[in-house]
Structures are given as structure tokens and as C-alpha cells.
Length: 262
Image (cartoon, one colour):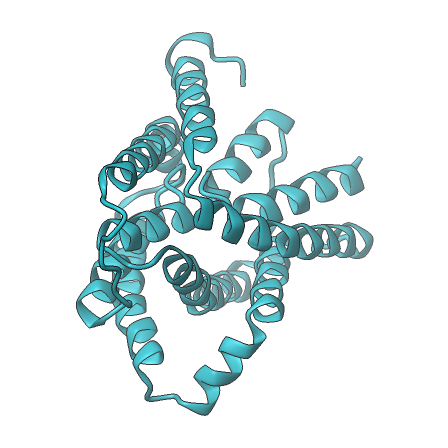
């Protein structure tokens, strides 16, 4: 059964890390539903590593360009976006415990749904001759702030950053690509944070086969999800995600305060 849980969580990680529906929110939700408890620090690090590799594989040309031009405009934008993200992530982790974050889950899904809906409406109202821009330093800072707030469970990191880019007038494909590229330092930072925690308190029980299954599932699913998300952003069809998140938010809030099923 441990292998099955690892497979489910791996698929969830690969899907939700890059779809605008919140990976942290869905992992927390399914861990509660499946009754998975205990310290899964090592497994969590592997899941992040799997999605990191997927991003690098899909955007390897862009990654190579970033390495070749470490002081270029795009690298500067990524660094600027990462700084407020790190600061806000540290603040949230300092002031909010696990119970408080769990209590926020349903409202986080609701916020993601509202953001996607607002972005979809705004895009439809814009004229066809709207002049799109690239991600500049100012936009990068704002996207970084939004990304930092997505540390809260239920608020989608990819959805928030892509929506922020679109609202700021960034071209669709560029907004999505920047969101995925800026996820690289964020994922690395998350891995480092978890590794430090693991060194201090231990990495918990490690099941080699379960970790392998989860890693492969997260990596393979993430590859397909990134490509799918790029197509979705280009077409601008987000309504399905908004409807799903509205329904999920209502269910989670009802469960937390009325039903208490899990």
C-alpha cells in the first residue's frame, strides 16, 4: 500500500506543480484523505527534484541561455522575482504552523479560482491590438511577490505567477515560460529548506521502491503537464480550472467546518 500511496502522490506532484490548482494544497488534501501521517521529508525532497528535472528538460535551451548569460535581462528578472518570494516564504513559515495552514486550505483554493476567473475576464475584454510586453524588472518584482504568497496551501504558484504576468500585459507564452523558469530557484530553495529540516530532525522512514515509484511518476507526469499548460495558456482557456477550484474550495470548507469527514 505504501507503493500505491507513493504513486498517487507522485502523480499529484507532477500534475499540480504546474497546473494552476496548487500542488501544496492537493498534496495536503490527499494526505489527509488517505490518512498518510509521519515524516516524509526525504520523499518530499525527491518529488521536488523530479519536477525540477522536468522543467530543465523541457526548457533546456532557455536554461543554457541563462547559464551563458548570467547577467542578462531574463536572469536579472528571475533573481528579482526570487528575492521577495524567499522573504515571504520565510515569513509565512515563521508565523503560521501546520494547523493554521491546513485551516486556510479551502480559502486558498477559493483565492486561486477567483484569480483565474478575473484573469480570464480581463483577457477577453482586451482588444486584439493590445501591445504585449516582456517581463521587465518591475513586473518581475510583482510576480515574485505573488509567487511568495503562493506558499500558502491552496494558492497555486504557477497559476498565480502566470495570471500576474498576463494581468501586467506580458505575452501569454512568455508569461508561462517565465513562470516555469522562475520555479527553478523556488524548487531548489524548497529542497534546501527541507534538507536542512531533515538534517536537524531526520528524514523519516525511507522506502527505496516507494521513493523510486514516486520520483518516476512525478517526473513523467510533470513533463506532460508542462507541455499541456503551455498550450492552455496560449489558447487562454482557463475556465475549467476555475470551476474545478470553486467546487473544491466549497467542498474543503464544508468539510473543515461542517462535515468533518477527514
